[in-house]
Amino acid sequence: MYESAKVLSLAAVADFKAALADFRSEAKSALESAGLEARRMSDWLSHDQVTHWKAEIRRREERVNHALADLNRARICAVFGETPSCLDQKLALKNARASLEEAHDKLRRVGKWQRILEREIDDYQGPAQQLAVVLDGHLVQAGERLARLIDAVADYLATVPPRGPEDAKTASLGPGRAVVAVALCPDDADIESTPGPGALATVAPEVLARFMEGSP
Image 1 (cartoon, one colour):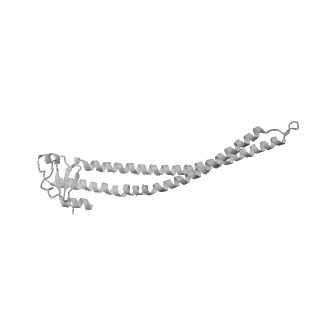
Image 2: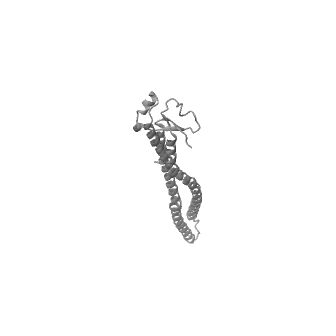
């Protein structure tokens, strides 16, 4: 049973409600950005890089074949009955084969990083989905309850006469300036008889019950 609440400020709850809404918006935006970036990187590795290095392998294989053909032609061409050294052709073939091996190594590395990225994305998705549930569920409910709190206490304050000069001055601000912050004190037996300095009112139990149950 909610016994009472001591209203201390008409500004804190609205500020908190607005900050909560800002946090939810920023967190949802960050989740969406992270998800898009993960998908972009996955597509870049699995499509762009794989396609690029497969094409490079085919191109470099052709270079190896050309270099090998040049070397064979040089070997069968004798100059004044002497077999040429073919150093240039041998060096070109060596470089072409090294370039081809590099392309194969790059493709293997792309596959390795694909697997690593997939594991990282899987590890990320669980907590990200949990946070999404909190943002779209719990924080939405919290905002709705805060709105009900503001309305319930503002309605109650409109029906309760001020207790003193300070209360009258604050109450005269009217619900248009209103925002309410309350401290729930179910075990405080003195809350109704001795409101602290600056208190606007002590909210009755039925107001708290209406707020907590979510009834209009």
